[in-house]
Image (cartoon, rainbow, N blue to C red):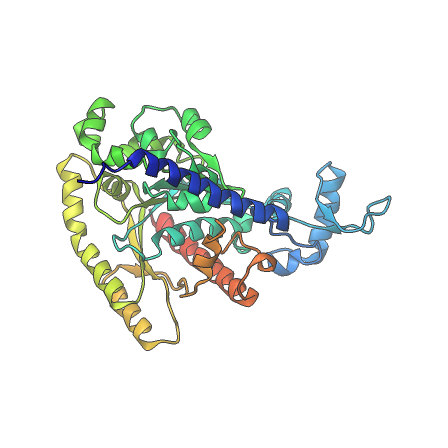
Length: 405
């Protein structure tokens, strides 16, 4: 017989390799002078990109804000009086311009956060990519910038893919302040926001991370709930009762991502969401799996209700991922899923390797800048526009749902 497997050695080498790969990417970004989300606009271009702003309005508002002490970043050659330096306005600066002009923020309407669960059990359906893209798109799409939307992504997938895309350094560490850990404790609002909610590469988009250790909590859910003194009738509502209900005034939109399997995390997510959103690729195998998942929803609802919990969902919609508008079989797939679901978003995420190529450097389509993209810049720009269009489509759908209540 051979010697026993040295699992500890394998684990140690795997961790070292993860750190090596991550450090390599970070060094490449540092050498290239890039990193994080850094979309900038000249003062002259702002009125061309963002709604309800004329050039005169931008000029006058910027001048008034500077007179009041607000400092805008400038780039280029600077004379003694700053006259030759070009403005380099961030999205946060543009939000401040709208705020200075007393534009309505979404939060002014008094709604609690709209909680959305990306619901599909099919691996490879672009569930995580869709959730992260929507979260970042809601914050950065020009038509939505005036609303100053506050976004939170709750990662309940022990693989931590959303965590990797949004704050990849957290994905490399052993993080004890994960969403799953928050569910196991009776925390105050302040404790959740201070210890369990993290910044991401996009300002205004926050993250509650996941880690591989969360898988052990899901596997021993009943015992963990007993130890945490979670009543039996709350084992599938703990996410809402113990986490979301306490911070729902601090965000406008909350997205929940889980792994592609039925477990307590998925059941908690189903029961916590106001909207279920099902990403659907047109490939026949993916479509088949998606329809099978939708067919099982009544059984999942029964499991939640049997425990004493309730589903609080208001609406369920779908949208296409990996979609090719010019292919008839893709259009047919959309017709099939549209015939099943109560609603379909009118925009889709296209089939493009740009999404995976951005992920190679822990970027997303939103955070990657064309000048740094190794592929075709035009392809990236088109993908960015697709994300913006999908975000606006979802926002309008969600807005219609909550205004009906």
